[in-house]
Image (tube, rainbow, N blue to C red; front, side, top):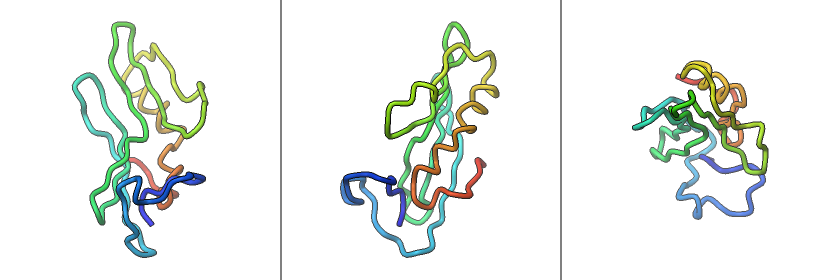
Length: 108
């Protein structure tokens, strides 16, 4: 099962994913964007990607967020001094673990 959100009220078809068997090959990595970076969870079997966090550069430093499926304002922060600190903030929530197959992964 790939990239299925825990506790979600919708199925894999709505997410644009499919079952790929019991063995799932997933990875988590940072992808550069125009004004920052995005944390991506990728199913290596079918190529599906899900953005699970991000950092963007602003005039006052860096803004960071870790995705969630509910309202949790503590998973976002503004004005972080460096890109590395902002990425550490996002990674500390391990947002990829909200998905089946995401447990036990580390950022590459």
